Amino acid sequence: MCFDIFNIFAASRELGGEFEMAEPEEGDSRSSSNFKLHQDLAEIRLSQLLLQLAVFVRTFDDVFSSGEHAEAYSKHATTTQGENLIGTLNGGDLRLREACNKIIHTTDFRPVYDYTEREDKSGQQQRAWYLTGEIELTGVLHGKSWEATLNTPNFLEVVLDRIAFESVT
Image (cartoon, rainbow, N blue to C red; front, side, top):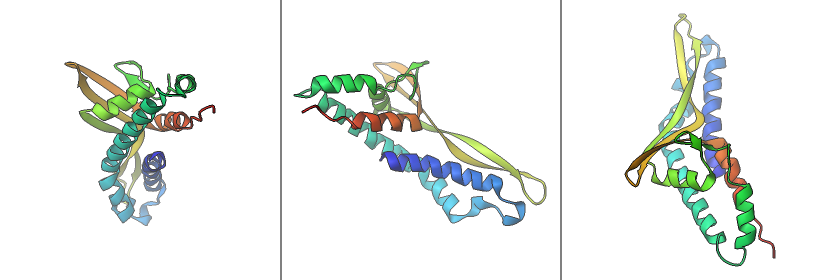
């Protein structure tokens, strides 16, 4: 899942770069089948994969937080919580477990886009939009609204570090 999520963002940036660097006489890469397919499916697939990953990580965390390896896991979890890396929650720091909770319970999932520009043959400016790697999430907890921004590439790094836990046997 981490691999697939990472590649959605990488493909988006690559497609934006191809558009920006193409010569005007090469045509408009936004009309390519790959570009259209990516634009049609990226957000939907990203949302599905992040939800699956968040549930997986929360379950992984719950399983290893109790039982015979709980103490070793607790130490590992402390060093792999993503402090100051994976995003913000209401202006403060967002840590791994809380990020998973926010992904699971979000009511509004908004990937952030940026664009590249170039001139076409007639001198008109054209834009191609691509995913930046950030996702804005909003929701409500106990009647109180919350807003989070997830830095997805860093989130994936922290997830991979967390699930690399090896119990001391």
